[in-house]
Image (cartoon, rainbow, N blue to C red):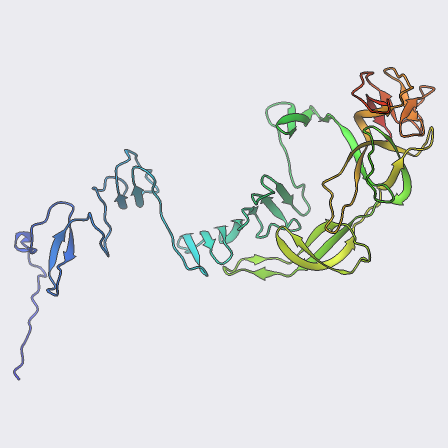
Length: 417
């Protein structure tokens, strides 16, 4: 068999006559080169109107940006001179899709000569969460329930950082945890006025405001948590006079120690404790094991007694002129439901502006001091001396509420808190 020698032609240093370079068909502006069908190895001009591999296609000519412009249809918009390396344009909805495996992550990285991913936006499909990295450290994440955390990787209340809740049933809830600093600071620059406003069902109910160096609480009523000794929840009329008793309030928590963990993307959640306020079930003691749920997750921990050095239990006042008067009944704290049963706490108003329930046979005037009548109602104090048994001072004789037994409530300033 004879040998065939192939000599390669070189165009180095030679002028190229582009009219001599021809493809098998005549193309038009905007066409691209495509392999001919069959096995010829030739090229042909083709329109970019159909699907094609290995090229960037636009349905109309590039007219924006310094880099790549993928243009489906013209929007009439311009582009900023900085983020113009890649421009996507479509006169309607437009966007980018990043598809990843169910056990992987999709990521956009921001880098420089010192660090090729010093900033990142990552969606972790394993845990269904999105997190944001700044200066090579995670600073914010959105977990699968919809909660947004800042400066921490867990929405646990015991971990320093901020959580904005978006999960079902907790939408709009906000938690801030810090160590050694005030969790929040409010600074009004322009003039005196409100620092915080309080609303209920869209209606304004109160505020905290500043005037010069004075901060006022509008309208202020100081209340204490308390409970009946038998943890019962009878009907107690608003403004009823309450006395403190020797028993101290008791609350319990389920507490679990959570070890440090690292997720599939290398993010570390430090060791912390998870706590849930509960009622201690019959037959259980402090230190016993308990399984409980906190923010949708199940934990195993132990029963722990909360610290309390200042809040006593109470009873409806049954002693006339009692010096043990604690305040007046405001409302049951129905939000304080335990894991294994209800803890029937109440709010006892003791200081500031509220109402006091007056006995039906008593007639009071503005400025009168009030004392316990010994049946849950108040009576007019015989003198104008502020005593240990003084409950309040009447500020208006308008009856804000009249109960079925004829007793009635009037506005007062409370003096027993």
